Image 1 (cartoon, rainbow, N blue to C red):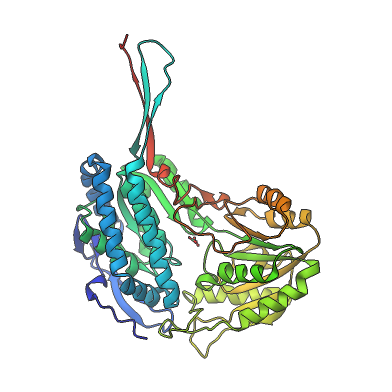
Image 2 (tube, rainbow, N blue to C red):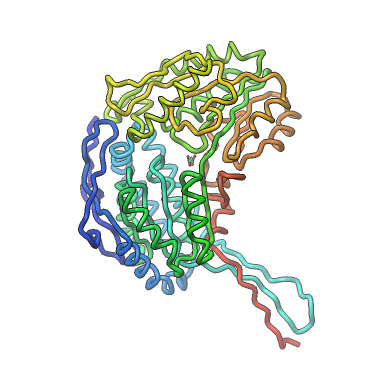
Length: 490
Ligand code: SIN
């Protein structure tokens, strides 16, 4: 299968600032590589603080006009953007597979998923209600209205190059904010194509500004946004370490923050679970995007009575996964994003084995396919103290831990500083109620491995961050409440 684009103009290599596609101020560029082959796809602008400042200037200039537009007008533009994303979905999927490596079926799914946030927030734009507060004193009327927070800086990860940026930009624009955005250095191309489509949809000049930067230059560009008092909000998806850095560094200007950070999701299979359904749930949740998702199960806890049977069923399904580049239409798992990712996966597996785990399936690099491939893996005998227990592996590795009873499962599951997602499988409705309440996570799958939806609130607790994306709550992070007290009415 060829990944050649029908619309070649969607392959952008410059920054979008103030409605113009421009090179980085210093004219520097850096290569974006295909993780399947290591080849350079294209060189893109390598932006620094000067570009970040220019983007913020453009966003500041555009803010008043955008804020003052009727919500219905903003919604209309978002709807056109959505229609263009849908119309070009095959090209967007190809770009995504090229730079991120995910199989085409997954890239197509992600385009639809990302587009659903744009459609959702187009509708939500027209539903930003305030309150008329019941009267407390004669002659006074009190009300609360919602206003856009101001300029938003969106910083997004490489694992979902389209969906993560769409679900930040769409609510920001719907709320009346203007945006400066920096996609991850590994995957700027899909995001830049999305920006080109936003421009085509009629997003006015300066309302959406996007720049690309290498890891090193990006730190400098983002630092400029962090200290810029005009930028009122940072929305970030990525690691907890970077989230904490952003929180610290933006404290000087007290920005509002939405942080969707790392996870260490438990997946609990109780003795009374439908085991086939639980295996299907693990396959959907763990192996989606090759295990490179913040919500994917990192620790799979299986009750002693069904441990052996579950391990057999899962191993069969995992062994049948096809690992291949996105050019193969049957690919189910692609390459990992880069050498750092693959080294971490190998380290976690080796560490588990050296501490007594056994490899049921996989457990090795697939160098015959390329440098960035790792075999989908099932580990039995995983235990507390192994890296797979305490750190996100971010790869196709399913470590199976054994537990005895419900209390132990909950204790193990919550024994982590993170709290993004958790999953459990049981047929007992009283247990569903008990366990659902006790698990410390922002997103919980109950007899379900595929939890993502634009209509649901997505976000974590504990060190997985704060703020919610999607759903009727997703606009709140881009709005501030203003209280008006009108006197002299008696
Ligand atoms: C993530 O991994 O951060 C996002 C996953 C999702 O939206 O389902």
